[in-house]
Amino acid sequence: MTTHARKVAQTPAKTDHNCRLTFDDLHKPLNGLTARTAASHCLYCYEAPCIQACPTSIDIPTFIHQIGTGNIDGAARTILSENIMGGTCARACPTEVLCEQACVHNTDHSDPVEIGLLQRYATDHLMDQNGPHPFLRAPESGRHIAVVGAGPAGLSCAHRAALLGHQVTVYEARPKAGGLNEYGLAAYKMINDFAAREVDFLLGVGGIDIRYGQALGRDITLDHLQAQYDAVFLGVGLGATNALGLDGEDIPGVQDAIQFIENIRQADDPATVPLGNDILVIGGGNTAIDAAVQAKKLGAKRVTLAYRRGADQMGATDFEVDLARKHDVHVMLWTKPKALIGTDKLTAVTLEGTRLEKGKLVGTSETFDLPCDHLLKAIGQKLSETTLSGLDIASGKLVSSNFYQTSRSGVFAGGDCIKSGEDLTVQAVEDGKQAALAINLWLASAQETSHG
Image (cartoon, rainbow, N blue to C red; front, side):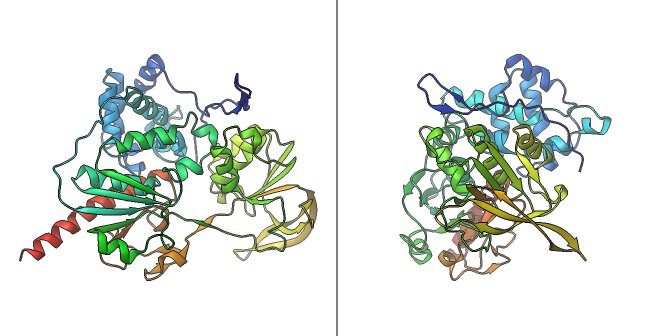
């Protein structure tokens, strides 16, 4: 896949005037002048391919045209009407393989329109005004919906359902809302507590309350929720992490990358997060890149990223891999961990070469020991099936219909816990939005049936 080269400066973490370690923005935001210049690059295509490439189908040419004519609030409303978390997506979306990859300018080998930066410019402009919410709720429907999980899918569903006039109660196991946006994205992608500010903005529509510290299977059950509410939406994500399957995964120094990122995001000062000198990250997705780059920014002497397959199979985009290399992360392909060395603490990892043999990945038996005192596992997450007993699950995902309904009538689902597309924030937001619309139709149908 051909991708254009996004411009990004290598920026180290820095210390603010209070001597706290902070992270710079990965992409510098546009100002009024640069935004208008970037907007003027758009050709306002008929049947624009960038719209087709966006999971939430934002009318991209229209919002860019609105920016170009000075209607910034209108541009923001165009974005947020399809993607209420357009601010986060502008920061975290792999635009180089989505909307910007589809830009027609790529066909004439010129730079594509900077759609992500323009989206951020418009949404930040509206949010910074701290004005009234841009959308009004429909009259109260008298229906009450339960949402499990305050991540992108759950919040998107809650917002759209509230717009449709329903009351929504969100049950969240953690002390904060935002899910992956709050806990799992690299700090340099979400500076200045943006995830929390976006949640506050989203809740400004009204009709939504969040109950924290409420976990499905521990504090609440599906039976309870269905007895109390007219419909239930599950946006539970993928709560459990995969294991390497090696002896010694419980020794000090071995950690899930997603936990490492969360510790950085939630720390008052990231410099206090425990960090080794020789760090090995196992994995090839964006979480692996986020962990590796942040480890380097925090001051790790050596950071190596090992992936068992080739570059073409990596989940991370070319841009993300280049970002890691620009931060002096050593990327090793066709390599997998074979043994963890250490008793009281990790001291080294035995790595083995890999190759494809008749389409199957196998070890080459060529091994070497890499000094390592901190290993970060970024080999994917999986569904916590124990909390979802009674629902059909296939290939590690909740089974859902084209209308987002699970195998249990009245229980809908969306986001990473179902198989609807790539496990991306933007896909989760779309799932939540579409599920809310489906729930609305399902409630109307049920009402018509009850009235004969």
